[in-house]
Image (cartoon, one colour):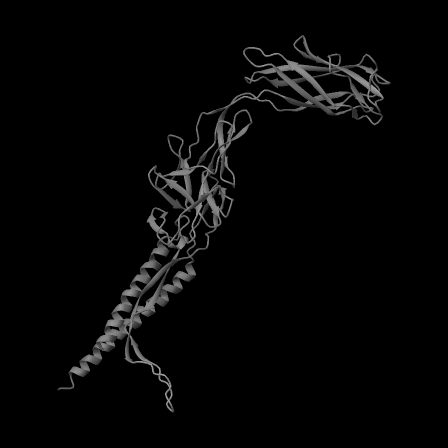
Length: 421
């Protein structure tokens, strides 16, 4: 009877631990990215009353006679399934699609979390909202290039940073030059271009001297031509008469024949460098309708300041500037483990490696088995209410049954003690 009582007591302790695990799961049902735990039991060592014997001659073999001594906690395991994504519409809230963790640190130690509730602190650092640990990743250089194979460090969004200017090198003019225009017809358009310092300047381009058939020196297939001239204020900065240039030629279908590019040479002013702008005019047609040409694009821009940022699925933090340009500011790092179930839970939605988790394999999101990152979402807990309540009922019944074992064994001992009477 004593053995039965001890087995019952061990079972009560084990079921209490299982209830603690269930209670913790239910307590964290609304905890961001929480992973539910499961507790497994193992039987204790058995007392062997008779060992097994092999068949011998005419006698058959016998199985061992063993009586167990109770139950003990065998393991706790994590449910590896991901929680669902809940939209928050906060650009710094991130969720991971797939197995893996964000990397956060304090400059001395790194921790790992699936809780992507991040925010910016007073210094512009991207930090874990609950603990203040800085999100780790790679910072972009001045040109927006990110070396995701180098050492990681704290990510910072530099508020007030400005983007460099880019002088215009190419532009595109589109439209139509009337095929029925007289020889004295003239069509003008104005282009805004930028110098190397980001100053804007207005360049006027005019098409004139419509000639049909085409002017002398025309390429094969040309049936008509237009001369052109570019002016910076009143200064001619390019024309069909410039050495190396030519008129704009068209074939019988109204398409440009020849290079389809105008070269404009702009002298630098106010410390800016000289620049040459190649103007693509292949989009200009000569059809029987009124003339109208316009600048459709150019690749220059002036300086701008950072106004906002976004985070894309590969973890890149993209800065959005007031001049309409975007540039990478950095890239968030993620980490995977060979055995994430072997990691230590540190509290605060943080994890750390253990001897059985393997080392962190840090990489860029979406690459080489790393999870993708989605901004504006948080991962919910993966606790399943139905499963937890079912386990709670089973655990309660197991606890009750083992208390009955103890009380029954106690009654049997009392009966044995009363035999002497």
